[in-house]
Length: 142
Image 1 (cartoon, rainbow, N blue to C red):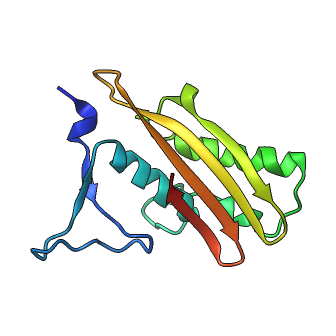
Image 2 (cartoon, rainbow, N blue to C red):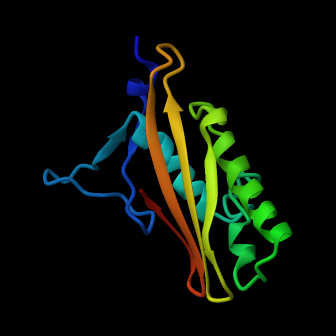
């Protein structure tokens, strides 16, 4: 049995809205894409926003307009790492996070990790780009 392929969720657009199929139903996402979508939305959600899950979310948006120091870089990387590691299907040893650029207007972070099937141990590569700017936090696959 392939546990990762059993994962299924409703596909959400960049604004967190359901994506509608041509038949009027909701489009779904499966497998590793479910895990990637979950990580994306957790990075975009500030802790306490979901009242039934007050611990869910990330404080990455607090780094907006923060000075580029080694300490701030390490803190932000650790925050992103903790969000990714909370997802049991991610191989923790595969997580790589790098700061692509950082100035007072925009911070760009690139992440790579592997989503692993718990039973077959097969992995699928995943990557996210995180931009923190004046408009908030933006997360894209790739």
